[in-house]
Picture 1 (cartoon, helix red, strand yellow):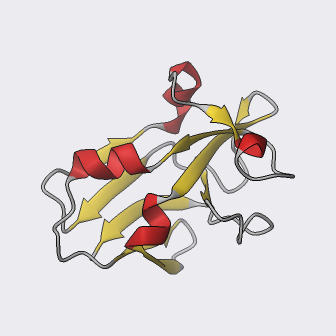
Picture 2 (picture 1 turned 180 degrees about the vertical axis):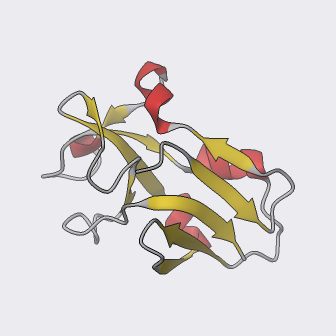
Picture 3 (picture 1 turned 45 degrees about the horizontal axis):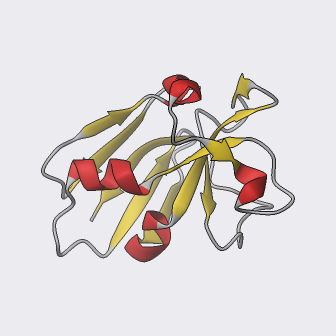
Length: 121
């Protein structure tokens, strides 16, 4: 497992996310408060995306996973997603460093995990 997630591609700034420090971030929240029947601490991904400043022509992002798989996600869905970084007070290890949950809860049983890079295309 890697401890960071890179935001790359059609962005003005390549960003490195380190989920291990989010435990100290005041923006964290209980995931169950937003998506019922899920556990863990999470943070909204939107502020990080804004800091990277994706090109206005960006329509989706590709999540590059540690196992080589690629998952394409529309920008609107990604912007309204959460990164779960801790479960039971401990960093996410299985599928970590963070699990990506869509705000509508449609993937709560199968969040995107093992993300090493989010490439904006």
